Image 1 (cartoon, rainbow, N blue to C red):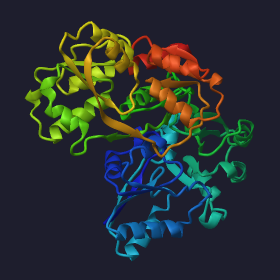
Image 2 (tube, rainbow, N blue to C red; image 1 turned 180 degrees about the vertical axis):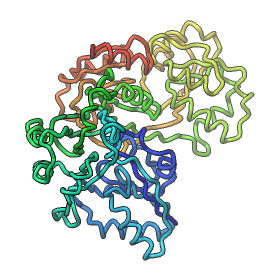
Image 3 (cartoon, rainbow, N blue to C red; image 1 turned 30 degrees about the horizontal axis):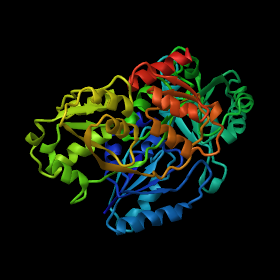
Image 4 (cartoon, rainbow, N blue to C red; image 1 turned 45 degrees about the horizontal axis):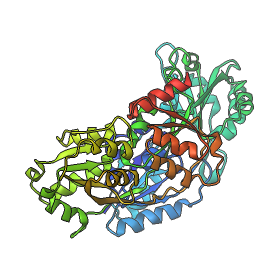
Length: 490
C-alpha cells in the first residue's frame, strides 16, 4: 500500500525519469492530469486502472478533494497507486496538498521529481534560464492562485532582482503581467518570449519584448499550454536554438500501430523533431491456454518440416510460450524457418534463430509463392500467426498442393482508444491491417486528404482502396518509412 507522486515532465517521454517510468510500469492504479504526454500514458500497464482527473490551468473537472479521496480509497485497497502529474509535482502541482492529506490518513508515500516545464520549455526554445553574462537568478511564478483568485505577485521585487522570470499558467494574464512589470520599472524593451506546446514537435516560439508580447500572443492565437519567459536570456534564443532545425520539426505524423514494436518508428520520427500521434494497437491476446491448438501443434512438431511466421508478434508469442511451457528447444532442430518482413526476421535473430527464407515483398502472398518453389513433396508447414489472418497465404499454398497447419496463436482485441484526430502531414502504415485499424478508428473521415506512407505494395493498395494518396517505402523496414517521410518533406 503506497502512493507515489510522479512528475511526468512537460510532455516529451524522454524527459521522464527512469524511476518515474519504473513506478508507472509497476502501478495498479494511475491518476493522471491532462497535460501528461500521450506516450507516457501509453506506458501504463494494460492491467492497471487508468483514471483521468483532467486538471489544467484553472480547470478542475475532478475537484481536488475528490482526487485526494480517490488516492486514499485506492491505497486502502492495498494497491500500488501512482499520481501522475505534468512537470514536477511540487512546482505549482499541488503535490504538497495531496501529501498532507495522505499523511493525515496514515498512507505511506514517496515522490519522484519531474522536469518542470519552466526549465524544459525554455531549454527546448534555445533559452538558457541563467547565464553568467546575462542572468544570475531564476524566478518561477504562477499566474494562478488558490480558487482561481488573482495571485499576489510583488512585481517591484521581481524587477529589482533583474533575473530571468518565468510565468507558468499565465497565458490568459499575459497582458496584465507585462503591464505590471513595466509599471514597476521594467524597461519596455526587455526581451521576452512565449513558448507554446513546449518540448513537442508542434512547439511554437515567439520572441519580442515585454511591451509587444501580449500583442504577439494575440495575433498568433497562442494557446495553452504555454510558458512566458522574460529577461535578457531571450536574446540567446536563436543562437542556442537546437530544436527547430531538426529535419521534421513542425511536421505531424500519425503512426497507425498494430503491434507494440511499431513504437520504434514513432521514436525515430520524434528524434527528427516530428510530432507523432499514435493510434494505439489492438491488444494482443495469446491463444496459449492449456490444450490450445498451439500446444497440440508443438507436441506434433516432428510432423512438420517448416515453421512459418507472418509477424514479429507471432515470433514472440510462439517462443515465449515454448519456453514458459517447458518444451525442449532441441525439438525444433529439424525445422526450416520462413517469415514475412525484415522486422520479423530481426525478431527471429534476437531469439537466436536464422530464417531460411524471407521474400523481398512484405506480404503473405509473396511468402506463399516463394515457399511453393522451396517446399519438397511430403513436407508439411506449421503456420503460427494471428487468428483471422489474411487468406492469400493459405489460398496460394492450397492451390500449390502444399500441406500445412494454420494455427492461431494470438488474436487482437480492441484497445481503449477508439478515435483519433486525423489532421496530419502523413499517416504511416506498417501493414494492411494497420490501414484497416486506422479506417475503423477514423470513421466518416475524408480519406482522400490522407497522405499514406506504406511499408509495401499490399499496404499501399489497402490505403488506395479507401481513397488515400499512397507512397511506398523503398524497403520493408521502419527506417525506410522514416527515410520516405524525410524525402517527401524535402
